[in-house]
Image 1: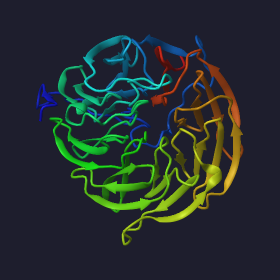
Image 2: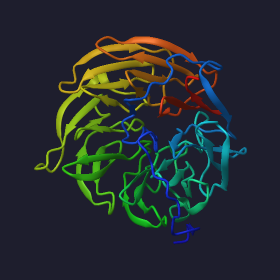
Image 3: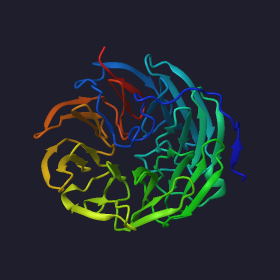
Image 4: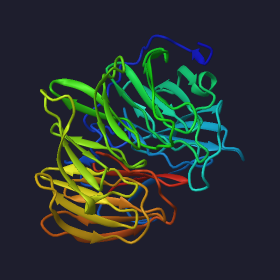
Length: 399
């Protein structure tokens, strides 16, 4: 396999992920929730900023927090073909290490995006940093390169004219990537120790920016792949399709799951029940009013939340789909919000972070302006909020 550079096949790191870590896009269980965290409700360019670290180049990826390190990706140079993976000390913000690579695939993106659009993922021992150029680097927590895949070497037409942004997930020994585009469109599971292909399946040749979603049902781990015309569930170790649901689906916000149910951005928002005796999910309800814009839905307790691109936060009952309330938040939103404790934190593209108290009636508690645009979803670890603007990585925490 000509695109595989194997730097090491064994690991000597003993660190494992903890409950306080935020190891991938949308958190440890991909639900965007940290129930026990209490970040500051009010902050600004100076207020409640524990530290602010400068970043090279550009990026719209989300940060992750693992093993006492805050990890983020970036890209620079006029062509955005210089790739960076950076680690900062979680407590002090000191840069611990940075690794640089050259892009092997197509680097151009929409002006609002960046080559550093997919968010990295970690299994607590390794970091899997993916880029829009379809380059995937695996490093240990100290920044040592373990292996590197330039997927465009094997699949040169796998590219999107305005950039790719699907974030990988790691489960059951597989790093799962989704590359859906007008060219060579596919999803693949790579061996997390070597980077070699475990499986590869063709997908519809159509541009899509959703990310693989982990799903636990009927005592087995599955991965959900959402295209613009269907949602399918696969075995993460061999890619075997378990079931498929055909429907017109959104191409940016991903599905989310909770308690064996799936909340799919389709026909507004669709709730799917997965029954062990059925060959495909059953539609519980469809509510047009709950259609998300760019942000993935969030389920907490007996409620589901969606954010329209224009900033309308909607809350609905998960049993019926009944819309309970709506709250207007100024701005245009790309980033998926997070819920920490009893508050929702939503960052708009102008760098304003709105904090909404959740309950029977919403309350817009504060609007916090960082003065730098934000397109990546926040991370939460402990009582701190980690925000990635185009120029800095911010840790928001009380003194």
